[in-house]
Amino acid sequence: MKRLLTLVLSLLLCCALFVPAAHADVVWEPIGNSFYDAHRDECVYRDKAYAVFDEVPVYDAPGDSMSKWSVSAGENVYVGFVYTDADGVEWGATDTRQGEDWISGWIDLRLLSPVYDTRDFLADHAAEVQPYAGEPAELTGEGEWMLWSYPGSETGYPFQPDDSFAWKDWAGYVYTDETGAQWVNFPYVYGDEGWVYVPDPCRTEPVSLAAATPAPTMQPAQTAQPTQSAQATPAASHSAALILICVGVALVVMVSAVLIVILYVVKKK
Amino acid sequence: MSRLIVALLISLLLTLLFEGAFAFLAGARTSRRLLLVALVNLLTNPPVVLLCTLFPSPLLTAAMELAAVGVEGLVYRTCADWLRRPFLFSLAINAFSYFAGLLLNHLL
Image (cartoon, chains in turn orange, yellow):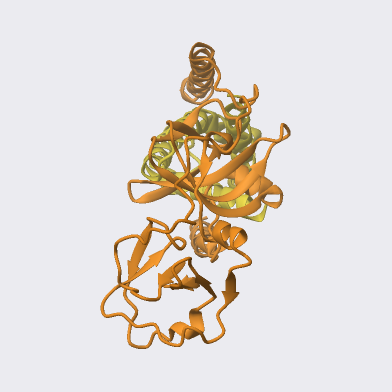
């Protein structure tokens, strides 16, 4: 018996080593979300940020009645995968930090506004963007470079290229703006993507361009009214259902306890 | 709410299946002993799953699982005189059930 238990525990510990590896992947995936695990094949990779203009709930599964957390107005959410339900509503998989861990959930994309990004810029300016082919030949700047979301964007992230950074190997596209200045696109550099302003890579002030796309307006991605499946159940009936479930669980526990006492404690005596 | 009920039922059924099999292999070969294992799981599994579903948190899950091991160990110590090490049995059976569930989730 003792050897069996020891063997089983050892095997279980070995199995546990493989569990985290199942989620080791470059592409972000919602971790520990049973809905995603069950509908992975129906989800489409979106990889996009969305702006929130009014507090929006995030659910454990699309159409759930109880939210897991809420995103405050003014925040941006990252959506990795998108699931389209039977009513045609798009739900985005997103996550948030809770203490030391990350939890994932689903958010109704109709209530959000897509953030204009590099892919949108490349699509809108396809005729003016060229793959990098050697021009510009030089890209120098002392200190941190700024990686802008798109030419003329007000959103940028600093990164420090080290001495071995061969920027020409990482350059994707080149865009020439209306002032004649060039911008070099880096599809992937130090975990980020964006554009570097060639005349002054270290410039921290946004470059104002007439052709730059404005920030997302107050328009959500869709204007359709939420369907019945997406609307939150009225609070009263939700609370009543939860109370019923809790009472049911308590009954099961009490009956089990009584049966244990009758069958195994009293009868033993 | 229906998803919560389904989660409770599936978790209970799988727990009964896994722990029943483990108990059988560990020596619970009579219906009386297997019934005790089933009742012990009815005692602990629904409240643990309910609380961990309503308040998802790794810390709470760990605490609830440990509490379940403790409660089940106490019941086995009181009622299962055929077990020489009731708390070790409780730990092993719950660990088996927990990781078997994780593996099943991963495979599916």
